[in-house]
Length: 134
Image (tube, rainbow, N blue to C red):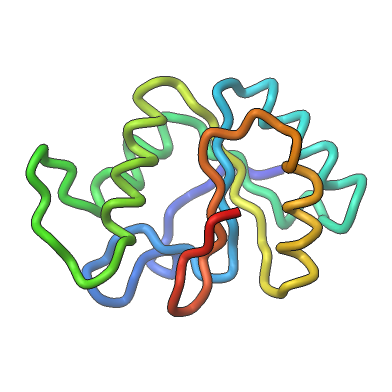
């Protein structure tokens, strides 16, 4: 499993906020919980190369700068900026994420099945034009 590096492909075309189309992001209160879920994912449909660890410092150093994290953000057409700010808040509390390649409905369904009874604090699937709650 690799640690996430935010590249331009993982940002929204308009505005530049974090928007990893074709991936899902799930956050957990601890790294141990995230790693256990990563193990379970590899027992199902997912390859280790399709799972990225997202430590709090990556969120704070690479995702936070993609949005205006001020206390009074300007309204935007989409919710990508406000969702990214939610990730920053969780990272400040030490939450750890997994970004998982979910490019089709079968993969999203498999991910839902694995995380269903886990203690996740955030779970979203990023589609081309929508962000879906998991």
